[in-house]
Length: 163
Image 1: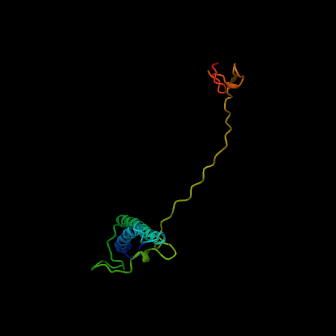
Image 2: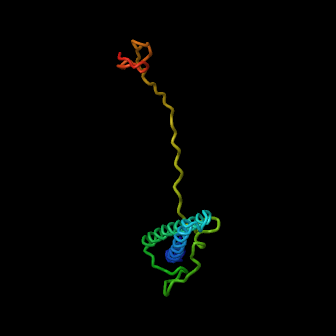
Image 3: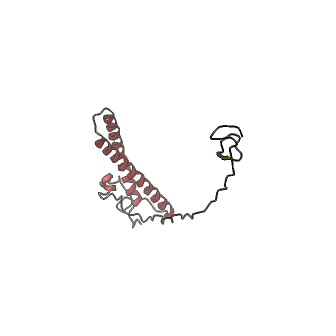
């Protein structure tokens, strides 16, 4: 719910800033990759850069999806575009600390709840045991050594003689 505040405008500004932050983290990740390949960076530092970039891209993807949902809602309602504080947009948008830190909280939560619900969990399948009886193979004895061999065998598997 937007309560008269343009959620789409705020989210769009946040997405623009997050896109710039993610680009700079991507460049830092590329630099870290080069340093790691040259042996000038240890694994711990390298994986920290990977983690930072992964968090940034995940946050940006999540925010992009939220922007798409807000566009869909705005089109369905036929609402006008407003600025992030609630009035009709008249000038350039105001920046309000929209970075990765403003989107992903310290506890790992991402942004405020948008009222979307997750699907209910699926029931695990149950498997019923089934008894399968395999047909018994008919056997015969080798005419040379007396070993038990399949009835259709033309040679003995023990002595190798023809049957």
